[in-house]
Image (cartoon, rainbow, N blue to C red; front, top):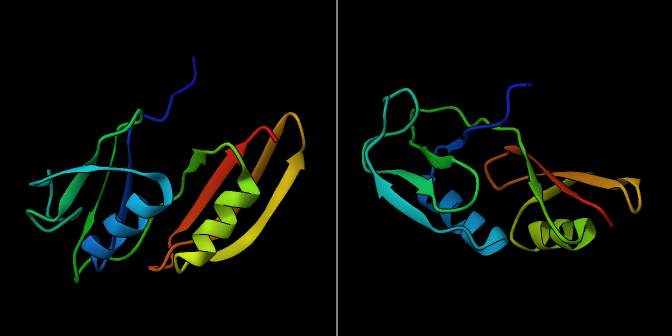
Length: 120
């Protein structure tokens, strides 16, 4: 068995703005609270994502923006368009094999690289 993704984090200098961005883009909700480490997020600014995959969005002014993961979507092009409309920047896509796997990438307002994947 390979090592599955068990957690993801999106860390930036303005956690509230990032949480709002992903709430609008993917419909994510959060449970705000503390953090395991000050290296990850300032206390009280880390939002655990309430979704099927274990992850969180946090950070603070002293932390460097970082992330990379793929989010499953129904329509890669539509997700990329929406990401741009919300202030993100398309890096590439959609690209791949229609009917099998199609991917794209964008950067969010903090410059984090995010992937989206679907089967269209």
